[in-house]
Image 1 (cartoon, rainbow, N blue to C red):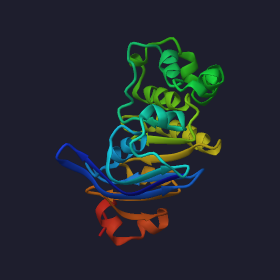
Image 2: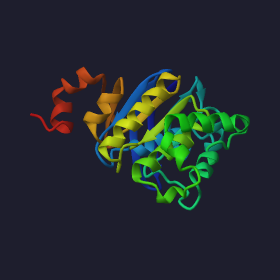
Image 3: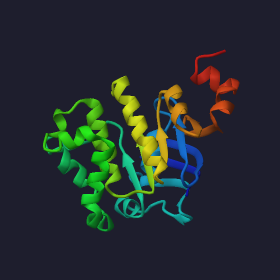
Length: 235
């Protein structure tokens, strides 16, 4: 479904990504792991179209998409749950969710998608008229995920979805994401908490200093001495 090959990205004169490659097959849950500043968010943003690739290629459903607009990528089935949620704080929960149904093809399904989101996160149905900025961090994250679902994506990019979320709510969000995955949405997840990410994904890529350095499932990664020493604090 998604193939990123030798991706490089520059911010002005600063190179953010040097050589990132990854592949996500339809129906998979794949993690993108690494320390702060490794290039994880830049990778997601470049896939969506927020940043322009300097070199390398991005293919979605076997179609080149590097350089394509965000609107075009969303319309073709890619959605992003951004780090920090980025909700419209003064707008209601319902209004925030409806903003996710921007693509033309998603608009006729707006009511059905709202029902789907409220079934996943019943607390949002109870608070649909409440300003999103007054919700707890976990509830705001539910709105951000729900908003990304409103465009009826086939690929969902999640950037730190558990950041600032209480542990009890993390489990609720993870359960909802598993259900989303089981209903056919492919997931690429960025997460700093390695243990939590490996509980959710089927396999993962590790990037460091803008380069892909490792790839594998939980067993192979945790058994790799380089991964264990750098990311699990083990010698």
